[in-house]
Image 1 (cartoon, rainbow over the protein chains, first blue to last red):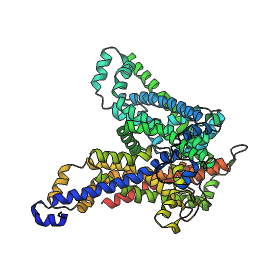
Image 2 (image 1 turned 135 degrees about the vertical axis):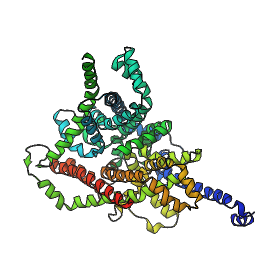
Image 3 (image 1 turned 135 degrees about the horizontal axis):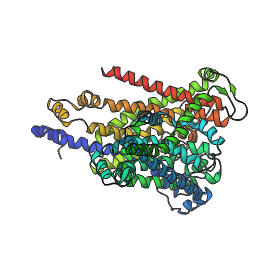
Image 4 (image 1 turned 120 degrees about the vertical axis):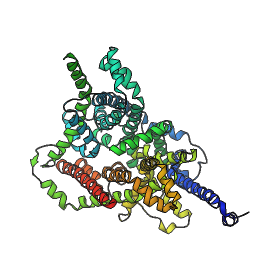
Length: 291
Length: 291
């Protein structure tokens, strides 16, 4: 066996090749370790969800000796996850639809027409990306209390939609602006009208942009904690992150229940992520650059 | 004439829903927040106008100063932790082999989890009795290093910075990969032919060429750190003795725990101002460096 150094001396003209291969190998090992360390908290979460309480305490690492599937059912019942899943689902879906519909309509108008006040409207939406969300918590709370919106689905749906509109509009405008003007003229000559053109041409063609916006919005609404914490106090209206946060204060010593509940809660987001990885990554970056 | 009126109708119908919901739930609350900041108010009862009284108190408030300092620790951890790690990962994960794509997905994964889930997982990792960090130390024979990671005020803030770094490396990495892929290959080839070593290539070519992206990520580090709230709320609630208090959590505690709505509003407004000042300052600093 020749070591890389000997090889180098023996074959001076091919010097770089083995060195690159070797360092690539070391690099891949390092990357695998990094990947494992990054992933480990999550793997540990899922494995712990199958353990019993004493086993979790005694053997924090490694596979469960017995796979306690009933943990999930217990967690589901004890934490009343059915209710919070339903609430999260309703709030997320309705806010998602409002964001996509209103966002696409506004983007259509802003990308296709010239009019007075357009710059002002764009500036206003841009402002929405620069404002830290938390700075609106206090006045929103007071305002919603006055109009009796607190402790309703609307208390989450409307703020979610409002804060996501900025990003939705800017991502969609960028996309719609690239659709050629000729298509609009053709559609108008065919007599479809502006809204016909919007629904039959613009919306289908903007599907990739809307998909990106939709996936990002889904993740943000599904994961939100701050708004739910402040605007929802009725247990019957708690969303998933809110009911999970109760574990942090209440049940945290019942490890198996906490881990099973957390696992159940993250499964939808992980599934969405695995299905739409590329779009999630691109979208987050688009969102990050502007926000 | 009728065509013009029709376009006008389209503009109004298209823009109005988005604009209304956005102004009502984003713009109006910001203005109100600044307004409430001038009052002494408990959320109910009479509002007493005290001018800049709240702001004067903020300047002298030691806990506010502590929160700001903690926020700056998070900024530093992001800038000097996330940026170099993300850049290093981007450099070695630039190609799109299957292996590289898998590692990229893993690095990005924490981004799609709810911060409540992340907070609870890391709460367990740091747990003094059952935490895997202490178990790990025992296992590798460093049992004397074991401690209550989150309740030791001299280290708790740094311990909290670790999950924050872990959480947000992914999007920065993706942004750097995109920027690196935009460098024309002729430039890299030419410098390679000229005999540039990898380090020289990195500092003289790659980093200057992606400098704009780096600037954007530093802005994101700043604005992101000022938004940090969920993780702190779940893991420490800002304690012990305000040692992990951040501006957002201090705002929340003042408003919704001790009902100082006026003071909380003034803190909200301060967060916006501090965020804008830090962002502008960092941009000026980096502009000078490139010249």
